[in-house]
Length: 563
Image (cartoon, rainbow, N blue to C red):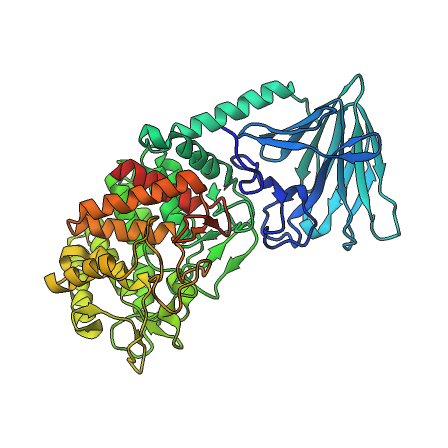
């Protein structure tokens, strides 16, 4: 399998290194176009560490790129350079017929390179927050790093072939670097390939026609995992190693479900990772990385729904693990009821579109807080799941309590938010009706047959008749809405999570044919356009971050379950 380095980064399981081809559309960077060795550590002000070029003599030469999970090959007419990441902190380079240039021309504070022993050089990139050891293994190196009393600028490392070939390594370290032997380059390539195949074999099976898409989805998920470091205490599947280099607190649920079929250990880590940071009030943060926890927002409480899906997929979640999640899930549920109901009407609220996960949805066109019916629906389901977990744990009184709370909350939702047999979003406090054609208002279809028959019929009818379904799947805003935008984030594009939630609700409502039709459209779009953050609803073209794990995970889940 080969992939487009301009869309999908070259990395490996566990590593905070990635290599990307930076183009004009690449976000969160100011470096000129090119191929770069990057870091995805959360404290890096500048993710791009060093530009990677091929040279002949002293001149940079053009090259073609061929990327596979185990090997990145940069090929020029005069020769080639191959790159492998055999271990999370090690990048290997091997070239023939050409040289390698690693450079940085940024005048940033304190960046420097100093000689070490045996022709090694320490490269300290302060703005990227990494220290590297450059280890020449074969060939001749030339370092151009003039010192001005505070930093080196520019920084240029040239590695030239000896007897046609060269080899070198770049290693990340914190306080000390230790010399060690290196394997043969091809042995490392083989081992990385085996690591990837082992991971791929733990991904859900899909129909043969989607086998290539499954391999790319598996690669994106495998390569997006980072090892525990700093604030991250478990192996963590980032949303991407492009620029969305965090774990967000609903994205992780879809990754956990995708892993739960055949890799339950890693799935459990993904589900629990945000609860590692739960505060004393019961809240979990909006996002985390290895150095930053964001509390300004939150994400919707889909965790009970996700746990339910995982329990259906695996026996791994035993009593010990149910005990691990039960109390945190109780506190998370109660946080919404205790701290996100400012008008005390029993219906929780979102304080910003970001809290719903649908950042700029037209549901939030009026000033928040907004009582959106999806939020209450998630909590109804979460309470049901807590009842089931309590029952499994032998806590019969608590099981009954959560069951009753679920019924009470559903009854409140229907009395409070039902307008003309349609669930509506209201401004908290004023209870002003929000006029919106957002798909977000259809998410309560997850409640399925718990809803009155007419309410469920209206949800299904609205999906079918209100221009929400295109040739590629579910638009997040009706394509006839005056607010529809082809690249409008949550005002039109197709997203993986909304697709999975609606499809699950349709299935639970008995609309299996429509659910399968939407899944087939989504799977075909992913197969054609890759695993983007979102997609143009009218063309199916990928938008924004083009290697996004909840998209690859949802593809794997839906193609496995429905096709």
